[in-house]
Image (cartoon, rainbow, N blue to C red):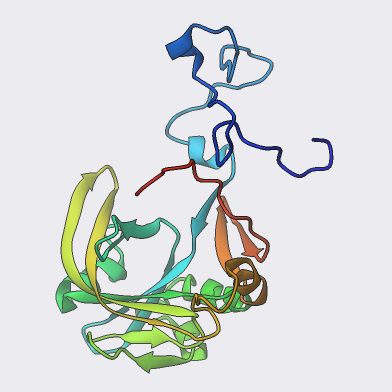
Length: 232
């Protein structure tokens, strides 16, 4: 197919036989030959993530300082952990986000829209000598409804989490794990049987972080061609 549209997938929703992996069938088809130096370059495993682009969510993690003032920090190494209501993000042990989450036993998560890139960038600004972050005064915040925290206004979706555990020993980082105890999704972004998913994303684009150092507004998507009989 030269039109740019993907062709039919063998064994995916069709009656065509599934393509087998050469290791299991003995066929000579080459799917990926990483031994060709003209096609691949050996990279340092410690810095490989800066060698090519990967896509991740971009969220705003909210916590409260000891004096009750809010702290908002952008995170892209953040994801649901399984499908049972756990959420985790990677953090440095010396960051205020970790200190506050442990002290208050909770944190909040906001999923900003593409229109909120500047606000998200402001949340990443360094602290002043007195430890404050004046740029947060430019952000509109509201009290969380269940946990002791704040929500960033304008985010299409919010999570309120109770701290579950902190997993350390990840070299220079830790994994902060929380259990979602409340969630809020705006009507404009919420999935519904009355609206096609593709149309919903087109009307309410999703913000993504393209590591390293770029962002994207996702407004065009296609349904993933799950294999017939696939179950999670």
